[in-house]
Amino acid sequence: MTARPRPPGHPAVLKTSTDLPQTARSATSRSQERNLNTVENQNQNNNENRNGGPEPREHRPGVDVGAIFHGLWAEGNRRRLVLRHQGETVLRLPMTIVVIILLVLLWQSPFLLVLGIALIFFLRLQVVFERRSNAAPPPVHRD
Image (cartoon, rainbow, N blue to C red; front, side, top):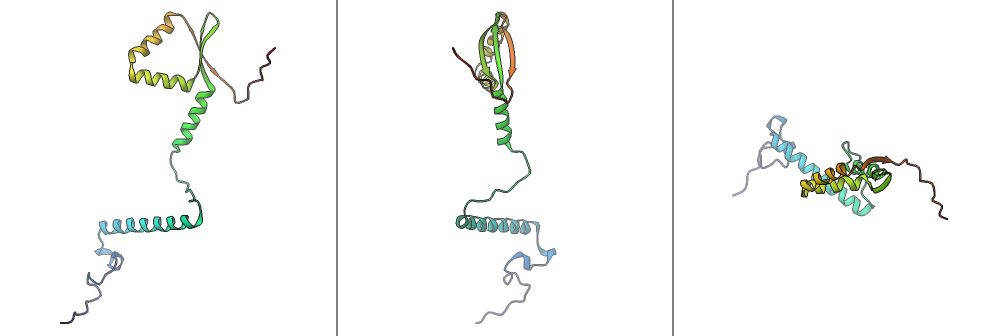
């Protein structure tokens, strides 16, 4: 017994969903087709990058978290918290370190955080926030 040839519109003859009329294609088959095309494009890009060198980076719109973090870190290192008692500097720390200490104390022991802040007030320490300029500080001459 020989197999009869199937008509052109029969599902067994169709190779991809693009052979179907637009009305017959469902939303899921269109999304599956997009996913398949995306995977094929990624495979082509990977093959090209293996042969052609480093992968080029695409500029994608959105938030660059690394740049934000780097900017905050640099700005925190420019600012300093200075504690003074009767004109003498007791403690000088960059703001990044101060924020890290505050977050750890808040997470581990909020009581110690409140105790430290109360100690600053009871000892009448002067709290000063300094900001260094972008210029390099003048050289220190020691005699």
